[in-house]
Image: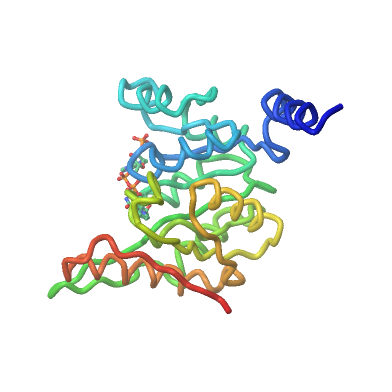
Amino acid sequence: MTKRGIGFAIVCTFLMLGPANADTIAVIGTGGVGSALGPHFAAAGHTVVYGSRSPETSEVQALVKETGHGATATTQATAAKNADIILLALPWAPTKAIVEGLGDLDGKIIIDPINALAFGPEKSVGLAATPSAAELIQAWAPGAHVIKAFNTLTRAFMVDSTAAGGPITIPLAGNNAEAKARVAALVEAVGLVPLDVGLLDHARAVEAMGQLYVAQGYQGRTRYEFQLRPR
Ligand SMILES: NC(=O)c1ccc[n+]([C@@H]2O[C@H](COP(=O)([O-])OP(=O)(O)OC[C@H]3O[C@@H](n4cnc5c(N)ncnc54)[C@H](OP(=O)(O)O)[C@@H]3O)[C@@H](O)[C@H]2O)c1
């Protein structure tokens, strides 16, 4: 077979079988973050299932249509049940109850993009979860592999990373190396640059980056990005 023929065969096989590590990804929450990341995950060849409080509404169905690639929407628990990876695209306040309602999460990867913030007087922004949101989620789902990711940039650059005009670093904290590598591949699929910053007990530092990000909004800077360049 010619080189061109081999290339054509590889493309056909990819289209038939999908990427080597195609996962089912439950995107729990169809707001700003879920609707930004879900379409990228689907375009990368993963099966996206939105887990929503109201999967039948026209808004959620419009997101399903926009996402394409066989995406669907269902309840939170049904989405999680069939998933390899779960993105918690949720406000912090209901997260404990939602995680506890998702059923058996053993062996699943949980991506936590949450900024659990406490807003005080005089433009003060504090961290609301101790030791960190990610470690609390890990405690609520001890058999899962929690990875902190995607909390340090604004939604606009999740939708279109090129709009930032330069690379955006996504720090990843988590205890399971294989899970972290799979989340790193998802970060790359969004056009962002993953950086392994160590174990989950570093999540508070990553959450403090989110705190700083939001605090910068009070200074009128709502669209700056983090770029960490290891040498
Ligand atoms: N927006 C950003 O730029 C950004 C950037 C980085 C990190 N984050 C963090 O990512 C998380 C999600 O942010 P987001 O912008 O996607 O938030 P959002 O627009 O408010 O959406 C959150 C989604 O969570 C679901 N949900 C389930 N229970 C809920 C409840 N009791 N109250 C409200 N919503 C509930 C809803 O989806 P259903 O109606 O389908 O259930 C809702 O659309 C937050 O923790 C945020 O701090 C946000």
